[in-house]
Length: 309
Image (cartoon, rainbow, N blue to C red):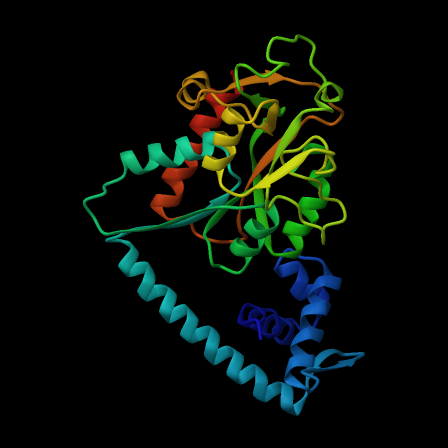
């Protein structure tokens, strides 16, 4: 049973209405109805009677709600205890796509932090779907979801259903990353059609087949290239680009200093819909710690500087 759903059942009891409870959580009514049905299915009993007077707890539902309130109160006590401990320790759980600007911002954040204090930081690079799941489930505090601008409304709807909020962090057009001796390195006016015979390196975990609207997060071909290699580790991706003749990869803009260190170059390449957005996501109503605030400042600062690359 998803314990994070207990608060929804308690709110339905408080308001006597799924519609009002959904409004209080800034989510849509059908999604909350689905959550209540899932709780009832797992309990094996109806929690509420649907009447003309509203949602009335059943006898078994009253017992369930008493336990739910006890669990919620205990969770608040645990969170308060953790909050007191966090005042003395640098703690953060952050996830996002594999992107150089995020790594640089995260490094700047760590350099500026007081690392003499206890440190407990988790940084995961993964796809947008998992970022949303990790933040929604409270496993991670902050996340960055990358999406094509064309599909942003679908992502916003998904975030709303998961009781998450977002703000635009960065908007960019993807560039092609390749070795300096790539056959297309010197060509001007490059388009995705010119890459047809080249070998594409693809983020191995960026495809989310259960999202009918989601395409590969960093590939103009949507993963349908006739010659492609899916790789999960960024270090391996860069090594393949350097050593495999004709290999290329779609990425967000990378500054010259980082490209030079990796022995790679980037080139503009036209393809339809080449506009992407990175959305900073967080739980609705959540309080930001000082560490989260400092990381967001670092991300905004780096994103602004990368915009002018």
